Amino acid sequence: MAAAEDRILDAAETVFSSKGYLGGALNDVAVAAGYTRAGLLHYFPNKEALLLALLERRDVRLHIWELVVPGMSLADLCDVIENRMAELKSIRMLIQLGHIVTAEATSPDHPAYEWVHQRERELRTRITDAVRLSQERGEVDRDWDPEVAAAVVLGSFEGLETQWLLDDGVDLDAGVAFIRALLLPARR
Image (tube, rainbow, N blue to C red; front, top):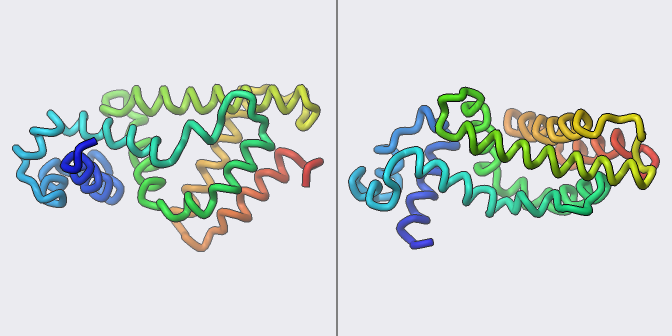
């Protein structure tokens, strides 16, 4: 990615993570990046293209698709999250950006609606597979509906992040350990 595009995406990250996509103006991003609106539009044809590029870069920087990979159990997922906790805490703005855009994108007319829904579906699918593997290994109750469990697991981790964003006194490490103990009581 060109240095100019990175500078614009850095500015968009700052603007959208504080004002949201709907509240952040393209002019705000241009000024923060040191460009005119026309200069910014040379690199990104519109605000929607800028947002989608920013979201893709966010997931790459968060290594989101390395959190839940095929063949991973729920215990493996908890291990990965626990091992990456310090890194995740250091990129608060990226976490905040994701939560703001996800909340905004619950509306079907939001430009990131499809992107957010596909991403959440893929995460739930991968966690569903992790639940099934954990069931096969006898690590979790075989009576759990894997799809329901995956939605609850994803919601628990995302909800914990939301609580931390609202109050940085919320202990993410203890929260992840608590989620692990609830999911895998025999593996304490």
